[in-house]
Amino acid sequence: MAATRMTAATSGARALGTASAGASRSARHGRPTRAPHAVSAAPVPAEAAALTSALRRQAASDLLDRADAELVAAQLATDPAERFTHAHMAALRVSGAVLAVLGTRPPRGRTRSAWERLSAASDDFVPWASFFASGAHLRSSIDAGRFDAVDEEGAARWVAAAEDFRDEVGAWVDDAEVPVARSGMLIDGPVSA
Image 1 (cartoon, rainbow, N blue to C red):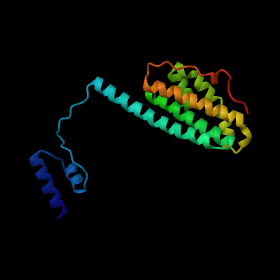
Image 2: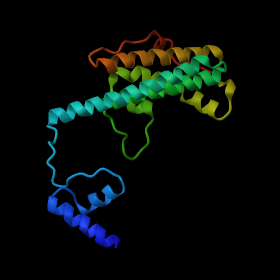
Image 3: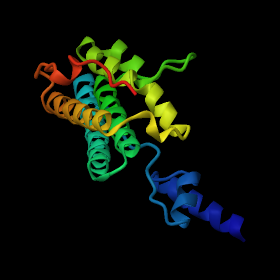
């Protein structure tokens, strides 16, 4: 009997020219149907580029929001290792925002860090990538349980650097014509344990 209903629904839909058998089946389950022969206007290349750009900027905005949350957590944390970890995570999210706007895709084959990808994607961000990549060993030490790998001063410096990086990238995302400023944080070099 179900086959009879399906055949009737299918033939009725075909007679109307509005749905396929699969679409009728979807309609029975409460899902929206679409006409198989409906003509949709494909976006012209300029419209597609604008849509892609808007989606990339939205993804970057979402990543920057997540970075902001990490920075708040870093500011509220009392343990230097926890502050450093949150600052590092914020910087990774900011790096992801840059990569999203630039539309870079992860390479096939060899795994590359976000910092390597950022350096390859834009010369403007090489100093930031170098700075934050220098903290990867500290992050690994903290993840391995060496919570004394970073002191309060070092953690405060990483939080400040992540905030500066976030601000510069935020301005860059809002207006790609804004040149990336060089922060004074980069002049001092990386934090040592």
